[in-house]
Amino acid sequence: MLHILTSDLGLIMASARSARLSVSKLRPALQEYTLGMVSCVKGKNGWKVTNVVETENFFFEYPKYCHRVLAQISSVLLQMITGESPHSEIFQTVKSGFEFLKDVREKDMTSFETLMILRILHELGYVESDENTGSFLEDMDGWNNPLLQKVEENKKSMVGIINKALKESHL
Image (tube, rainbow, N blue to C red; front, side, top):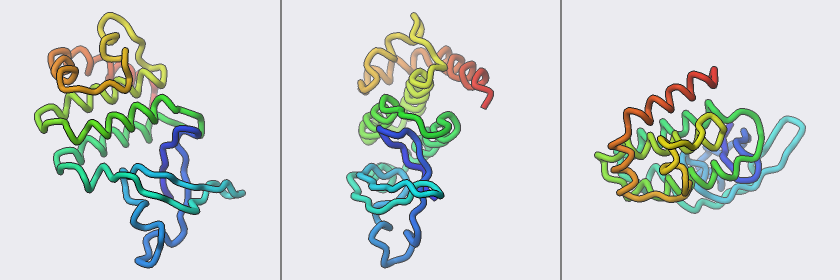
C-alpha cells in the first residue's frame, strides 16, 4: 500500500502488487519521497498503480540531513489530510518546498520545517493569515534563504501557532 499525494485527488492510498520484486517495472519509481507521474485505476477495492515515471527522488538525491525533515513533513501530511479531497495548493506547496530543500543549509532545516508545516496548516484552514503569519503565507511557492532567516527570528511564535493549530485539530 502506498500513500500518494496528488494535485487532483489529494492524498490517496493505492496498491502496487509485487512492486518490490527485483523484476518489477514499478520498483525503481515507487521509492519513498519520489516525485513522478503515477497512473492509477480505481477498482472496487480502491486504487491500483498501473504505471509510474520517476521525475526526482527527494530522499536519495538530497543530503542526509534532509531526511528527517522529509519524514516529519510527510508524517504531518498523513495525519492531517483525511480522505480523498483535492488539495492542489498543498501539493504545489510541498512540491516547491521539497525542490528548494536541496539548497537549504543544515542549520536552516528547522526553520524550513516550521515554514512548511505552517503553510500546510494554513492551506488546510487551521492557521489564518494575520500580522504574525501574513508575510510567511503571501507566496506559498516562494522559498528563499532570507525568508528562512526571518522564520528563525520568529520561530518561537510560529511554533506556538503551529502547536495551537495541531491541538485544535484534535488529531
